[in-house]
Length: 306
Ligand code: 3PG
Image (tube, rainbow, N blue to C red; front, side):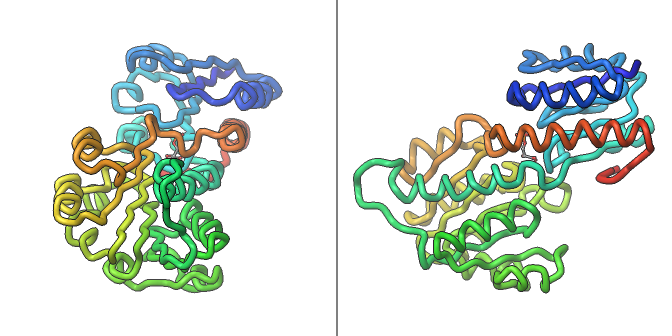
């Protein structure tokens, strides 16, 4: 009987876990749930006899892969797979997949929610500002970026996007202005919502020059990854501009410094929570479970990323 490990430091909702378990029960697999585990060594121990594994932002590094003698597949229940050592997995013949689009709406709603929250001074009664009529630039027009654009239009924002990997026709068909360079996007838009993945090309790529080119009232919204920000550049732009604001679901390493020096111009969620909704847990968990069954039973490699 194949064993599937569900390893989630940040647990899925009880409903999602039950639904995932029932898919595996029907397929005749054994399931172990390792949630909220205190130490990486718990994951290393639990993976030893697993043939398949579902994770979220859990770290699947070389040590985990090497401890997993029977592992055939890892599913990152979510979009970003920068937490998985793809090279180590590939070397050991382990297939890695994500579940694109399954938690996107939750992340997109949080991006807009944080913008309203900051614009209304953390929901205190002082006069705030509105989103209507403002320009929003979407940096990377994937599943999350696209929904952010749709919601922003409901707020009456003017929406722009830059994504060299998406056909401009797709962007234009959504009624979004397609920008040809990252520079033109930032220099035009007061609000920028970041949706780039963290990889060798993007790490530290959002820095002083590009941020400083944003118009007055510049607000950067990050529901992607903290690693894509050059924090020295971020600190410099805060120091030089009293209008610059930063909202993030993945607090920067310089969080305490920014919070202390620039009160009212930052908001950071206490813990990454963009995808933490009942709906997203269920969608991503169920998709992951079905992908495992389809892979183990039929060799289906849709959504393979390595
Ligand atoms: C993702 O890449 O899917 C999101 O960042 C959500 O991550 P999480 O599953 O750890 O909440």
